Structures are given as C-alpha cells and as structure tokens.
Image (tube, rainbow, N blue to C red):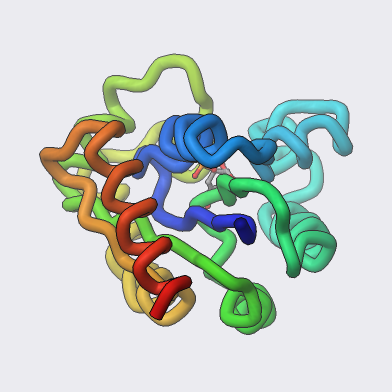
Length: 172
Ligand code: S3P
C-alpha cells in the first residue's frame, strides 16, 4: 500500500484522521507540523513571531520534498497548498486526500480547540477565519486526487470512505 497524504484547512481533522488511517492500514503516521516543531525546537507560534510565515513555508516545502514517495500516512499543515511549488509536488504524489469541511463547521471547531495555538487564526473573528479559508479552497481542490466531504461525518465514517475509494482507484 502506498502512502496517503491528507490536506485541508486547520480543524479539518487531518491529524485525527491521519492517526486512525495509519492504524487501519498498518503504516506509520507522520504529522508535518510535529516534524517542523521537532526541527525548529520551538512552537509554530514562536517560529512565526521570530522568523515569519515565509520561513515556515520554506520549511514545509523542504519537508514535503523528502516524502514524494511516502510509505506513511501524512497529515500536512493547512497552508501546505499556498505555494505553487508545493501544489506541483503534491500532484506527483500517489494519493492526496482533501478533507473538505464547511467554513462554519471549521470556525466552530477552531474556536472550540484550546490545545493548538495556530498563529493564523488565534485572534481572528469567524469572518476573518473564513477570509483565510475561502481563497485556499481552489488550491486544495487542484492538489487533491480525492475529495472527501467531512462535514457531519464521524472520523470512522471518513476513514472508511477514504479506504473504500482509495482501494477502488488502486484496482481500477
Ligand atoms: C497553518 C496550519 C497549521 C500550521 C500553521 C499554519 C495554516 O497546521 O501548519 O499554524 O496556514 O493553515 P494545522 O492545519 O495542522 O492546524
């Protein structure tokens, strides 16, 4: 089984679904945010404050380039699709799943999540969060080989849907 890459906005469930998928298909799970945090030795918020978003994006590109033929389930950061270079890299990868979620649902989840501090949404209003999300939608769509609607579905349902479609595509 080839690796699976998950993309989608913050709060779409990339980490949760990634963990569950990796157990289901028995491969390792890699969370790009965790890889970056490990390498920079500070939180993403601190890195944004000290070095800026552009430096963070360069790190994402560098990490993505290492996993073009992944054997893992990879949960990317929500902004991975912002750079054209990254979108080109994603298109070379075997299975890229966009976890598509309604903007209102994302806002609700992000406002309820007090464990992750995300510099791009931390002090933003629901409207401002949507302004970050909406222009990214075409980038997620063009980078994905599979789009899975997640709104109103349980993680288990989403995992089952990804596996059913991925296996069908692999056999086609
Ligand atoms: C970001 C998403 C975050 C993290 C950083 C920037 C973004 O990851 O990479 O805060 O620009 O969407 P998650 O999507 O895992 O929260």
